[in-house]
Every structure is written in C-alpha cells, then in structure tokens.
Length: 354
Ligand SMILES: C[S@@+](CC[C@H](N)C(=O)[O-])C[C@H]1O[C@@H](n2cnc3c(N)ncnc32)[C@H](O)[C@@H]1O
Image: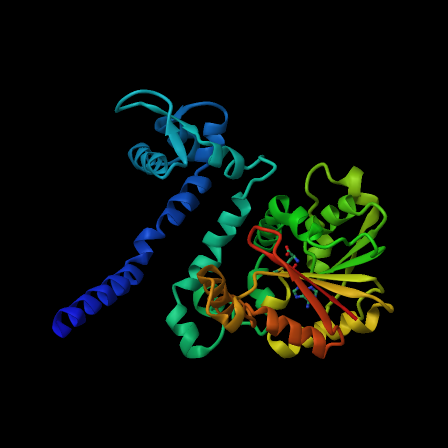
C-alpha cells in the first residue's frame, strides 16, 4: 500500500514538474499575438473580413506563413472564420481582438504587446542568469548595462515612446477603478509621481473636477507629453507637467501623491526615500495613494504577482510586496495609517495618511 501511495505521489510530482517544464509551449500564444499585431492582422480585419493573401501583401509577408498564423489566431479565438472552407477563406476579428488588438481602438493594448515582445520577453530568456547575478538582464537582452533601469527601457526615443504608450493603455481600462477605490475628492492638489504620459492624472482630473493634478516625471518623458487623443479639452487645463528626478529634486507641494507602479521598480531604501520626499513636500493631512499588484500575506501568491516580481528582478531594482511590507515602508516614511482596497482588476489601491 505504502509503495502504491509513493508511486501516486511521484506521478503527481512528475505531472506538476512536466506542467511547469512545458509551460513555455502553453505560453506561446503570446508569440502568435506579437506576430499578428506586428503584421497588422487585426487592423486589416477591423475593416471587414479579410483573407491571408491580402494581409500578406500589405505586410510584405509570405502568404502561406500568414495563412498559418491566421489559422492559429482563429484557433486561439483571436479571429473567426468569416468565409467557408479551405483555401481562400476570410477571417474577421472577434470581440476581443476588435476591443484590444486594433491600433485605433480606445481600449487598444497594442503598444503593451509590442513593448512586452521587445523588452520583457527578451529579458525572460535570461532568468537563470538573473538569479545568479541578482540583477536585471538588460546587458544580455538588449545590450545596455546601466545603473538606472530606465536607461535601458528608454534606450531609444522609439522605445521610450512605446513604453510610455504601453503603460498608458492600462489606465484606459482600470484607471477609473483604482482612482475611485477611495474618495479622493478632499484632495484638491494631486501630484502623480512618475506619472508617465499623464493618462492616470487625466482620469483623476476628470473624476475629481475640484482638483488640479501635476505629473512629475523625467525631462525626456515630460518633454514628449504623449496625450491620449481627445483628452485635452476635458482634463487638459487642470493637468500640468513638471520635469525632474524624483530622487534628487523636491516634489511639488500637494495634498495627495500618487505612486502608481513606481515603488515596485525600486529597493526598500529608494522607496523610503521617495515616500519621505512626498512626506516632506505634502502639507498637514496629506497622503499617498500607492497603486500596485499586492502579494498575499506571507508572499506565497498569487502566481501572477509572483511572476511579476520575477519580472521586476529581470527589469528593475525592485519587486512586488505584501500589504504588510507597504504598510511598513509607508510608516517608516511618516505615513502611519494605510488602508488597502481591491477595486477589481490587476491593481490594488492603498491610501496612506500622514
Ligand atoms: C513603471 S513606470 C509607471 C508609470 C505610471 N505611473 C503608470 O503607472 O503608468 C515608472 C515611471 O517612473 C518614471 N521615473 C523613473 N525614474 C525616474 C526619476 N528618477 N525621476 C522621475 N521619474 C522617474 C518613469 O519615467 C516612468 O514614467
């Protein structure tokens, strides 16, 4: 009996091991997505059903290979067959691809996919090296070896624009949720620290019309000020940009400092320095709104957050943290009262007050 029990246990362990080892095959739809976006498949299908030859001609790609790619997209639910049978059948977008994979769609995630393909995906090939070295893998992945991870992320003008656009896309989907997790209307002056293109700041200005919002980011990012189309009239006048290095320059005075996906880029000492900067610059009663994906108590899950933490190892100086860890960081910087809310979606919101 004991032997059979051992065997069953071993079989289970083997299945788990092989599941993890073959995981790269399961994750290959990501490559199909990157390739199809890159070749403009979904943009072509957004104009009506289209066959592979037409897409191939427009993309300068091989027709047979394009057909194989589009067949696979259909198999993955990214396209549907709009015409019958074999040969020259045409394909149309599904609801998913129409919503998220067409460049001009308001909820488009195309820049995020391009960024994931161009930078994180390349870093992930060096995970074992990252664990050995205990640091990011930009030198191996993209040939840039710099102290500041953003020197690698922003290694060219095109890469900087792509990253900023990619991050902006998240907020078209979940900006409102994280900004309404708490009632922020009492905060009349808001500063989005490391606020990138200002997509979240604009959403804040729209949601809280009594507030003015400042984005504080690097001179290069502020210089380009990528504005989401159509946003200028409604939120524009109440959103302004200030350029600076948030580790060196004082932050502008504000009632609320937003740190969205910023603290997970940095080690504890740097996070504490950033939070102390917000504490110094904020008036009495000021607060910080931290927006991050938060690990479960004890740091044992969820798996997506643990994987993101490994991504942070590969790309930054930081990691994902538990609520208790954020609470401790905030308290050390002078914000002793932190509350966490889960508004649904990938990010949690934590409001910490002075
Ligand atoms: C991971 S991104 C988050 C952007 C934005 N908060 C969001 O969630 O979409 C980090 C941001 O911090 C900015 N950043 C990095 N180092 C900085 C520095 N030393 N001073 C000011 N901004 C910096 C980057 O330019 C980038 O916009």
